Image: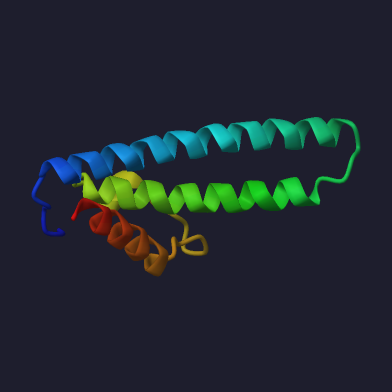
Length: 104
């Protein structure tokens, strides 16, 4: 289990920012997914939308894992990925470090 952080006002503010960032990302994913589906119905080129949707979902996943772990959740409580679909630990640590930098 990771060391619990001291919940100072700066830490609370950083976590609120991260939560809002996750909400904004989720909204953008929904909008992109709807645009993608609409273009598919019209038989238009969807490669750019498909790629941006994949990138958004991947980034959201890593941000969600980092946020949840900072809140004290263990990985098995957040997700149980398939062996071929493991999250990138370097990206998760980079996000956590960025959040910690904002808390100082």
